[in-house]
Each structure stands twice: as structure tokens, then as C-alpha cells.
Length: 142
Ligand code: HEC
Image (cartoon, rainbow, N blue to C red; front, side):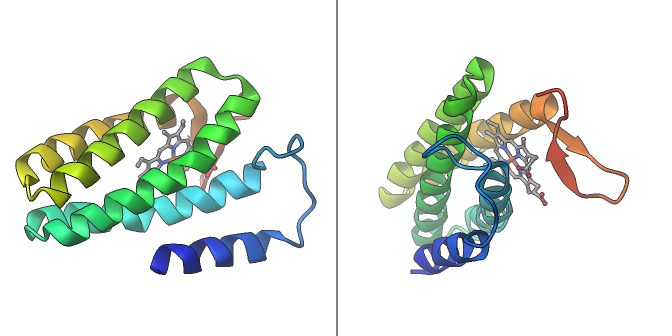
């Protein structure tokens, strides 16, 4: 239920901010919140792969797949075809990791994790900018 708690926190924290997105589309702030939630889940996923903890691998992959739903909605609203492709492939990879780990196939889960990480990187290369203070923002011209 950690996932539910994170989402509840995310939504609560954003509730007081102005809504800048299109009706129903996640805002830039919501997108960023989701990214900060994906980070620990992806870290935990890799740690659990190393530790051969199939149950936790499945759990973290499931969390990531759910978080990526918001990411997909964000890019779909922006009609950014390449980003939509990255996030859809990432979501499929996360689901395949979950299924593989549920079946205790950690080799396949490991392959899925590489595919997933590749999509994070591909999208970040195009759309993410690192500021001098080490924080990240959406590239200005995107
Ligand atoms: C379709 C595009 C896309 C995909 C896929 C994507 N990201 Fe991101 N990510 C971004 C953008 C754009 C930013 C910078 C703006 C923001 O934070 O929303 C970002 C920011 C981040 C940040 C920095 C958050 C902060 O502000 O401190 C982390 C960490 C992160 N992503 C992790 C991941 C991981 C891990 C994955 C893969 C499991 C992933 N992202 C997949 C687009 C993407």
C-alpha cells in the first residue's frame, strides 16, 4: 500500500497549486512529482534484482507501471509522439518485468529492467534539462 500512500501524498501536495494543464491532463508539477516517485521505485527494483527478491521486483515494477500511466497522459496531451513512444515502451517493459518476476524469472525481469532504463534515458535526453543546482526541469523549448 506504499503506492497508494505516495499517490495520496502527491495529489494532496498538489491540491493547492494552480492547475496549468488542459482539463484532465496532468500538470508539469504532477509530472515532476511522479518522476520523483519513480526514482526510488526504480532504485528498489534494481536492488531487488541484485538481491534476487522476485516478490519485491514484481511489486516495484507494478508501481512503476502505474506511475507511468500519468506520464503517458501528460505526453499524450502534449501530442509529443516520440515521448509517447518512450513512455509506452517503458510501461510495457515495466509490465513485462512484473509478469516475469511473478513467475520467478529474474533473468527475463533483468532484461526488462534494461529495456525500461533505456526508455527513461531516451526521454530524458530529449526532454529533460539539468539545472546548475542539480535539479531537473522540462526543457524550455519542449
Ligand atoms: C516520456 C518521457 C520520460 C520518461 C519515459 C521518463 N522520464 Fe523522468 N523525467 C522526464 C522529464 C521531462 C523530466 C524533467 C521534468 C520533471 O521533473 O518533470 C524528468 C525528471 C526525472 C527525474 C528528476 C525529478 C526531479 O525533478 O528531481 C527523475 C529522478 C526521473 N525523471 C526518473 C525517471 C525514471 C527512473 C524513468 C524510467 C523508469 C523515467 N524518469 C522515465 C521525462 C521522462
